[in-house]
Length: 455
Image (cartoon, rainbow, N blue to C red):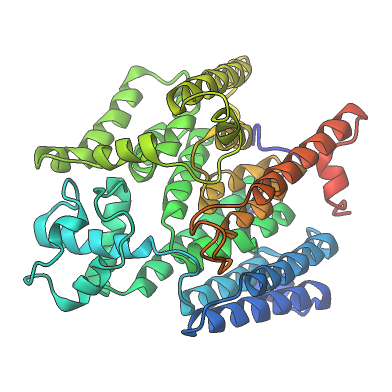
């Protein structure tokens, strides 16, 4: 395969259990057991009515992270079989599904959108606040309605995700566990795909990642669906299955607009008929909703104009510029970096996997809003192109949960992150980036210093 990073193996075929399946490996399995215990305790606490301590939350995730790093350090390509990796990843996802969402209430919107989609054929155009006081709304959905954040803003979730919300409603109305299960299964499919694209030891870091388990299995964020579709599109593009690739790309864009950042790299040098397929699938996705008079664009415009959370360079520029000017400056810088990356990519006569880690990394450093689950879009590329900075970011972004309401503080605004937390979160990533640059400068392969040779 071309352009899939260092030390990648073709791991498409799962091993025979009798040859190298789940025979005990005390180091890896002990680490997996420790992770399972930590996630199990976290799931138990998530079901309790008492307020979960932020320190306990970070402590349990820290134990899981440490155990994951131990497994990563001890594993070889022979001892860490795909079956062993999938077994433990499946255990962690199952534990998350058994727990309740942590520190998030976005799932109320997902459940409400599924209900409105089922009732009217479209979840778009009408803000949830419109239904306050309507007696015809079933009692169970009135309870959901009362808990939706920003109820005066119409939904921002794309049509691909809306179909998953609808499926959840059809299977178990007003129940978040069904969405947790669907998104956990989607993530397990992504792990299987990554085993075809990268070295198994780096896949372990994704499959066991505390960020991934927390955001997808526990909290039911649907971004994993969009990421799965995007990585499947890239895989099909690599395998020259062009029609499938552009169709999957359109579905990923229909999940979240983030996928558009990789669209030029997938459509690069393809005949116009494949561009036509891409836009046709988008039209099929959006057409029925636009025909009824609305789409996700209304909510997205409000989101892009008014919201700010956990930003790095954007928050810094606001000290000197108004929001519009800050966005224009950072947008211009990002566009310059993006064009440079695309030019580097297009120099090759053979299609290669794009550097999605750099694209998303630069984008998130400049974006006005960086929620922790956004990093799910970056992590598959961190598996393919392993660097210290990207994996550091996947850990430090969890500091974004250190807001006033989660800290149970009366002196900090409910959804405000203290400045020192922001500096720590992004500062450690910049330090890790400097280490990466230094390693390259002295001629040491980054996968060599982060990963012990499988030999």
